[in-house]
Length: 271
Image 1 (spheres, rainbow, N blue to C red):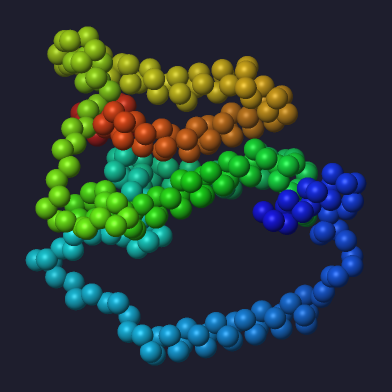
Image 2: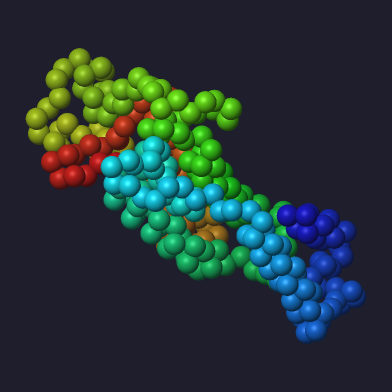
């Protein structure tokens, strides 16, 4: 980001970016390769000495009669484990990770803006860089930090300096959207037919996926719609809305104890 800011300042002054200035350049071989080789040797020495002097923090051998509490995945999977709090396994473990991979693969085909190719810049790619930083830092990295340091026994939330009390109980009554509407809003019982019961949740989901992109294309994102075209715009906005669904669902759980927007246990389908 520092180099991007420096390049933006040079562009405003009408000067070429640093990556296109010939002065001060060095060859990959031997300058860069030698530097990387020295760093590799130094890091290897540090790791070897560290491993000799300090014992690895290994726990007791696995015991099926004594499951650790909390039972956590490796740190790089804790983001997925934290997502399981808010989504069903088929969404948190299959659909959303697949969309992440597909979205990363689709970026070069969706974003064909030539600005920023071969040099760092922020002002010329504000939206693109901000979306990436939001997805990686705010969502993915924060979920790993949350699962590593703030989730204790029984996967309860603990503050940074709070004692991990295994007997801590949190009185949470998670409620589905259909229960909010039929029981609390309309004051009637839940319909027995699943489609009628979940009609409002299904309608809200369809509006979020299909109607919201159209509204954004006519208003706030009109410029992007005209620049990208219908196909690339709808693919990009669909991936963005799927990414945005995670913080939306998290806020709904924290503020309203909302469990599922659509809950159809008859078909093991919950959103």
